[in-house]
Image 1 (cartoon, rainbow, N blue to C red):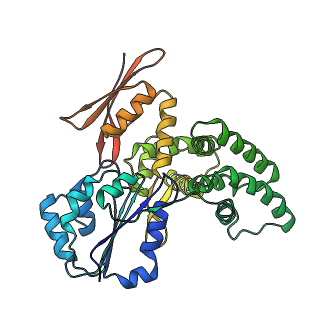
Image 2 (image 1 turned 60 degrees about the horizontal axis):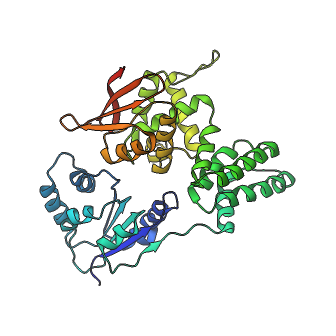
Image 3 (image 1 turned 90 degrees about the vertical axis):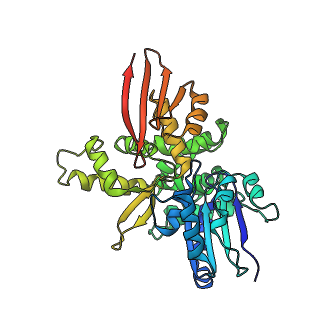
Length: 378
């Protein structure tokens, strides 16, 4: 048997790195081959105790204690560790001692957008670089997401399929773009609607410097009004944060995000759950965990779509950020916003000049949610 092997999967956001890793992780042959498997999400802002604690289902322990505990739990066992969404090679340096090298075929899969991160970790490893889909692959994905098992009259299917092929082609081989666009289409299979979306996708894919941002913006623009605020709300949560659905529903109810009709007999909580399910159906929100009865326990948002929600919030004249200084600085450069972190409290102070006033918003992260601490309009 070989020593612990590092398997890096690289590629741009939305190209399917996590999906590939998940498929390998859950494959029956993988389950049968390894004694134990663990999935860890890293993200740009990481914590070593959180990373190792998620393997042991332990919170609040010191890093050194967790390194020893993880090492002992894996010693002598053939293990598979998936480290998803890694941005810094230093993460591996800090946690490497937790993973014993028993020459028994253990594996560590790392997904990252940055090839240099993978090479820094193991320069001898062979990178698996994710490629954009060919047109036939894009069409196959589009067809499965747009139609699924739904019945469509053959003649009508033939008409809208030609339009669908054009839309799939204009998604330029990025799986996430294809999935998000089909989220708009599958609820309305009229020829007129598809032709309108096809025209908009064609324009969005050609006029923008980032050929995908226009496509993602289109998915937001086509949301009903009541769902737009709910989608933007998802940007308040930390990157890769798995939001408890019950908590999200309570927040939406408290913030009066829901718009019940006068004839609505559902409770606000039931209506909020419908909103979440609608966003999931549109592929703008992901199901992270399910309950034993199949209902959603946690949901999350893809980091590419989270960036979109933050951009849309910025365009409305608000500055809402989590307490992640790197992200604040990056977006501040794009928007002319001045940002400063209050190190004593862990809060972020964000100020910017609008047409009529300087707004200062102080946000602090509590249990994964950006909480408004102070708001001043000067």
